[in-house]
Length: 448
Ligand SMILES: Cc1ncc(COP(=O)(O)O)c(C=O)c1O
Image (cartoon, rainbow, N blue to C red; front, side, top):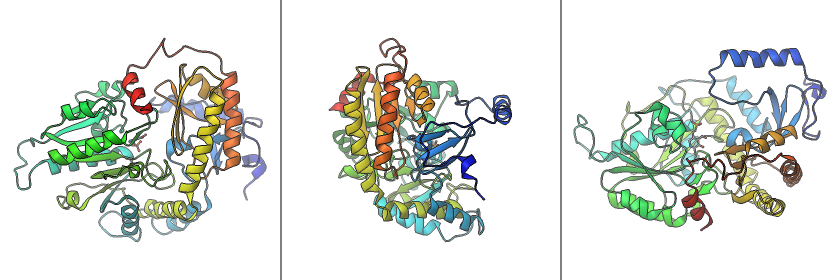
């Protein structure tokens, strides 16, 4: 039986710790330090479990989770309906292979088609794989039907945006603008060019008939919460159609409800040709997807693309449940309402702090841009029992679960007020601006 006095519960206030089981903790951290590839800068804590919008560490300390596993835990932790489906399906079939049908892929594809207005779905394991698959589709469509595949297609170029982030595989990193992610691995996929963010004239200047796709995050996430403007989206759609290229919307972070709409692009009239999703889709299990049109799908035949794990029965059953919960519990309404409360509360609170430059928010996707380095604020928040993160050095990012309550918004604002007050002053942005952020262009566009 679960011992709630040891495991920490959702009713205790965030930030309280019990006596740490020191020896075990240190051993695990030592193993991690010695045996893991050092790809991450991790906090020296061992997280053990979560409940709703809270996470607990091995000392029993409770954190209000306003990062949600970087936009994954949309239903928080241990949601009863997700846990139930995982238990049920794990006892039936975790994996069957894509050589056979199972009960969940077809219905899940239908539901995603209904949500998105797309026609066909391919399931991957992650966001980056969805990006790479979409890039392959764009190259495939770039070649006229029947043309020999022996020579490279003339229509092969990708246009991506400055300040973008699309993932870590070779294709995805090739269309990711940030140099520190790209340069160590060059040469990358050839034919990629970056367009200034929300600069339709720059897009037009770089577009011609050799472009097979324009790829963009509808709201840039890692870049610091920057929404693509309607004017830019419309021009991208028109240019893609005129030049026979695909418009690909990366909705891996901003899609599936995060902005208060099923998909972020649904605030625009024009639809993309491909939509990419992942993060919250399967309640924390790895699952991504490429959603596309019948026109694109008509060029695909068996064997052209595939995956061993993608679209397995357990992950798909959970994803179906996730989508049902979002619908049945009217979570889009909650996202919009809580998002508005957060935006208002933050505007009021941050007006007292001159180092807060701007707040950018769409639903529960919120960026707070500072003129100081954000790292110390993240550390102070953690100290006080609040999980947030910082992207591009100066933007604090909030990606709370869709299920947060009004009381949790208030709890957050109280904790965050203390974080803003108590964090010691560090270097200012003018001392150390990250050269990867196209500051002028991006800010003007985001405000305009
Ligand atoms: C917009 C966007 N695209 C792609 C990715 C890559 O997804 P994954 O980490 O699942 O490979 C991410 C991950 O943060 C993302 O935010």
